[in-house]
Image (cartoon, rainbow, N blue to C red; front, side, top):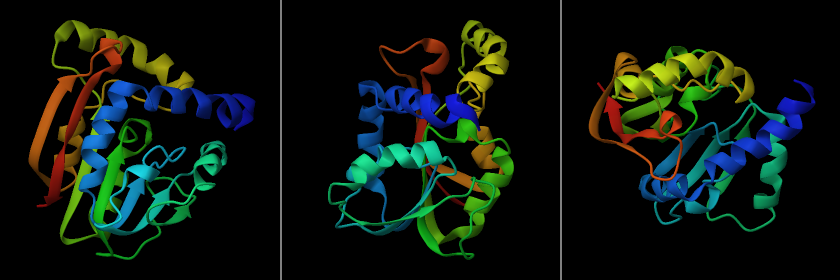
Length: 207
């Protein structure tokens, strides 16, 4: 992957994804997880200490980047509230059985998955009937001026930011994969560049 993607990029992503406006959203969403959880794009483990141990029994932490998992070790030095196990594969290759998890968690990761449709179909496959997909993701903004900036920046941004798409229509992607969104909220996060600040949060179930 090269020195930039292995050593520098994980630190840049951790810094951006742990900014206080982003952490406020994480603190709203992650504690809603329950049962056996599949966290897609666990990254450097920013969510690890946000899980509610009274609600969650185990977390499968899927993260293909060795650089990300390396940085996560510092969080693993402290006792974690729930049982964790790494899955070192991309989101398009979830190595779990059908109908085997109660919650799928997406936090600022769907933007980076190359084949987001295939990855969401994998999430749908492993989710139990009655299970939930919880998400907080940035993506395509509603304002034409911001959209124009997102579309212009995305080709270069992807190369610099680990494949991150600024202009993914997150809710459309989730619904197209076979999920039904049962609750959602969209807004710009404060104190962040608006082209990267439009955030979708919500809950979805199998249609």
